[in-house]
Length: 290
Image (cartoon, rainbow, N blue to C red; front, side, top):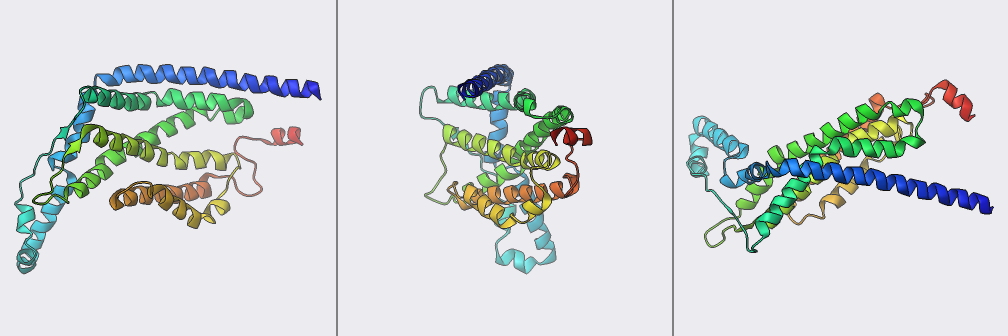
């Protein structure tokens, strides 16, 4: 019994040592990525600030739509005073800071997240290699597809947020401006809010990749995921509820549930069928286990 405990303890220590090694490699990769991203942090900040200029795809869509309304129904156009929207000049807003070193720390945060994104292939590879001792030989061959797909889906989630969702949030926030109520955006609060949502959307878009792996390994299947749709909708609502304003809750809840629904169909089309051999195993593996 003592020998078994010692063996288990040694195995646990080996796993901790291996985890520390993987984390050190990840930290080095992120640091190098941060060094590269530092040179582009100003351009990234300008891109994040872009919705504050008022020139977004939303303003263009509204102007084109209201212009069509003017042609189709001039009475409706004048009744709702849509000419004020069409002819409104975009009002530019600026970020402000109140602490001496605040812009520097904001630049550090932007560089850190951008460095993490640049280092994602290394991060996912280290995660896979940490799990690889518990996988079969054929499962280990999925390392490259996993790293590539996980990196691309995270980047797609971040891009989707910055180009589609972020202008919606800022436009909604600026819509509250009236006489006597003007916006005054603090650079730290503005950037922290944006970076947090970039991470959230990147992780949301990882859900189909995770489901694909688990379904190919036979851990989860389409019947199980399909039967949990109502719980997924509830979980999406709960996660979104941690954000204060309604529009942010909505734009988080909808993509999160859409990604779950996509994961259900990924499991249906690419997962192992009931009674089939999981993708990472072959008949010889099953015979050896038996």
